[in-house]
Image 1 (tube, one colour):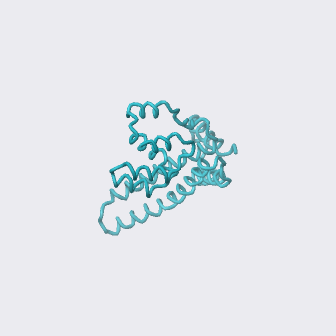
Image 2 (cartoon, rainbow, N blue to C red; image 1 turned 120 degrees about the vertical axis):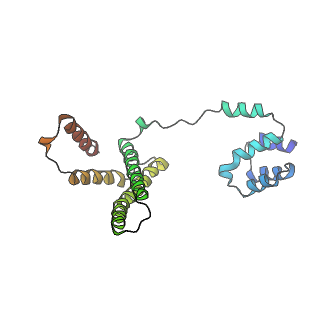
Image 3 (cartoon, helix red, strand yellow; image 1 turned 90 degrees about the horizontal axis):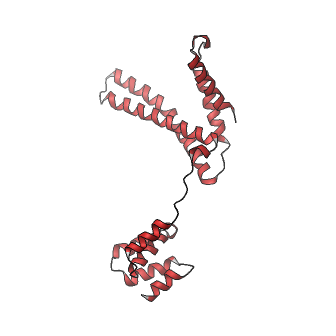
Length: 194
């Protein structure tokens, strides 16, 4: 098993060599098959762990090594750009509305009466634009997390939503209470600062 120790101590741990060592010394054929067919990018650390176990390193030492490694820092939501925070909130709201629509569809039951069919059709027509919007915003938000660059379409899409919701909800401002006016003002300002 000196060859395993040599592989573990090497700077460049060649994945295929590690799998060959696993084939040579491990009895579990399913585990060997798993690593043989696995993507080295995602399974290299697990292969290293399995070879360390094979070489006789005690599990307590292995677990101590894993717990001593620094954990990756989580991105604090407050540190995200405002447009990404808005996208996250919008995705959440859209998902909630889609879920409510699904629940309403479920509660209609399986009846095929004209009234139920009409209600079902209305809910499906209401749900479709929500799903399309959810998918667009979600993918653009995820693109930011993969690239670190805010996609140009994202602020435009969120602004479009703000304009649409303001147009869709005309109201007489004189009839609103002070709290409702402040909420309206905050909603408008949050979409207009880009």
